Amino acid sequence: MAPVNTERCYRAAMNRRPPRHGRPPQEPWERLDVATLRQSVLMVSVLDEVDVHPCDDGVVLEATMAIGWSNDLLVPWWRIGQTLGAAAVDPTGAAARARLSTWLRLARAVGDLPVGTLRDHLRPIGLPRDHALHPGSAWIHNSVEGGALDLGFGLAGVVADPDAITIAPPGLLEATGLDLRAMWPHAHRYLEQMGAIAAIRQERDPQTPLRPMGDCDVLTLLGSTVLRSALASDRGVGMRAAAIPMRRRGWVDPSHLDAAFALGAAAATDPSERGFTRPVLITVDGVWEAQEGIDLVEFALRDAVGAGLWVREMRFGSTG
Image 1 (cartoon, rainbow, N blue to C red):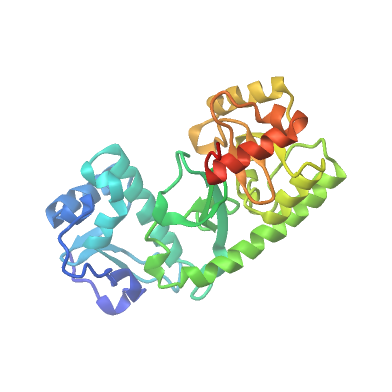
Image 2: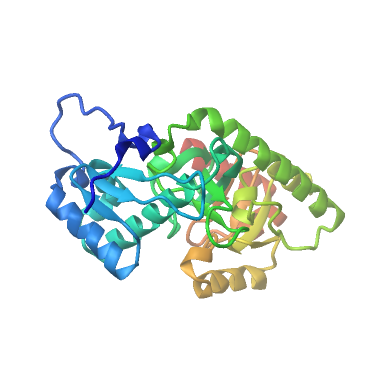
């Protein structure tokens, strides 16, 4: 392979390795050698047709010739390992392949964005903690009270479908050098704006199902304090029950039959598009998923005091 012109490799932050301060390797990926990482990259290159070129320092994603500002991107070996994360226990397994293939494709797509426009593509995404697409704790920028919903960054318009919001894997945005903590308030403001519009729509037609607004699906909209406040205050009891079996649809105050349907609908939905597998209770402060055997619809509609006691117990522990 011809030598890589490192002058053309951009985003120096991609090479900025986090300090270990002399500690021994602790994560599975930190124990992988370059030869093993090469096998992982070769697997992705052959099976998923990702155009990569290994070199001594890492993997080169060549510039996209049709895009004038595109440059070669050098991904160092340590970041390849970090991308595998927990899947590093089997670096040539299906989970490792999926993680690495997705990460490399997104890294190239992000690199092909015009300089200075990446922040315009950042969007908030909400996912249940046990969701199939949840990238793990490193992805979380905010956890909604109740322990049912986490919020993190997604990317709009960086894949073939311009309307798709892609979950940003841990490490990808950090590699661009953006200060993500400084970017989160901007993403959160967008979420609250969409939540406010969704609240107006719900007020005008309370019987309509919850639907996406802008680039925020229903799960993400539940991260909006404005929308939660509007929903929770509607009946004057400070809480509402909802069935949200899909990321893009939800029903407020479902009947017992609808709640049963929600459980079946969640099971029948593709895991990537699934919402909450059980009904949830929405308050101004947060989102609470039902425990086994607890009927949140009964709580919210018929026993506001009992529902409030349950929420307090979930938040602060039993007082009895």
